Length: 59
Image (cartoon, rainbow, N blue to C red):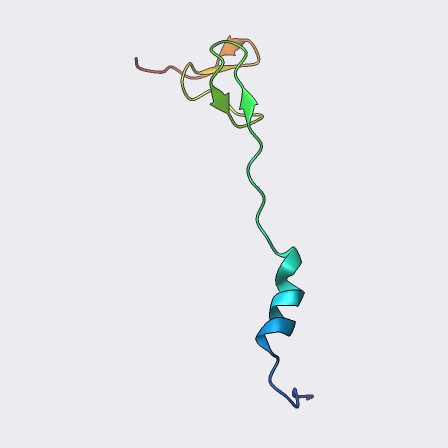
């Protein structure tokens, strides 16, 4: 089985990893209360999803 002949330098290693970064999550605004929420999820502050109450939220 082939084995590397030389140690991979930090520069070479980091150049290879430049595309492996995480993305910020997409943020949508709730149509009912205007709070930030994840797309395709019920609003955590008011509990609405697609114009109806999906979960009961204690206030």
